Length: 238
Image (cartoon, rainbow, N blue to C red; front, side, top):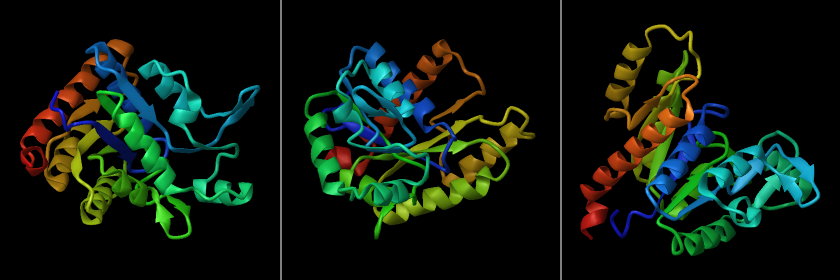
């Protein structure tokens, strides 16, 4: 692992398209390699009440994959209703402070080999007035991986997402296909079209219902390809 490749920001073409599924696969694969892994779901809406406070299932899944135990380090902004984070924050009288998340993430990155940060919703999901997931990712400065939910309509969503990531100034590190519709017709043709539209082959394609062994293998594949991409990038030569 190169010394400067410290983390990745995982976003998606929409909500419920497999960001957590992919992020946990990355964390589990890295941990299997013997790396110290940190995970973050900085903002989450849709949580249940526990004696310890609100808990979000995606954040808990990330923690389990990475072997983390301190919830406050993983999910600093957690809201109960399953609505857009900017609405949940406003209803709670909370302002999502991007600088606070950045400070926490940078502190965590110094203590681990890989930091996997999962966004909320899609790339332009709002966090508050004038702030979105895109602003958070840019402030974090991590390379961005786009998870594409493979279903009808994904070509347009993926092309727009990749274009937005690149135009934001963030590093587009690649894309991952996640088969969320097992009945999707012409699946391989759609993946080929996505490769052409996005300018690169997928880092991996996760099949529908992939088991733990398959997810670990695909997670390792993604890590290997991200490292190669990083080592060939201008950032690695600075």
